[in-house]
Image (cartoon, rainbow, N blue to C red; front, side, top):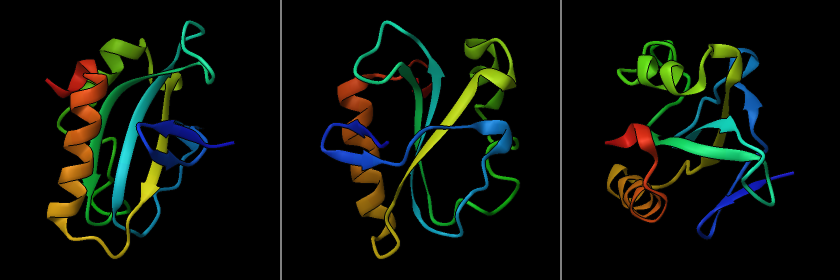
Amino acid sequence: MEIFFSVYQFCEPLPAASWEPPYCAGIYAILVRDSAYKPKPYRLIYIGESGNMSQRGFWRSHHKYDSWIAEAGSEDELYIATYLMPDVTPEGRREVESAIVTKYKPCCNN
């Protein structure tokens, strides 16, 4: 089942430790389980964009990785959902990223 942020339909959140990044441009959401959130029990802690999510070890080498771990408690508590945008320019991806950050104010995006 998918998860929505604003009007954008992301794939079902997957445990980050077993997630295989797609060889594709898009938006990624870093999440933690939180039963207070409905209809899906996930809280958005970071939103970002990438021209190719399979590059550079992607999420473990991300400059916010330590913030994500601090928020989640451990890597086992992190989840990732993606919104693929293969034919969208970097500016278009940043526009979507900015709109989601503005609306949801993820704690690790500051």
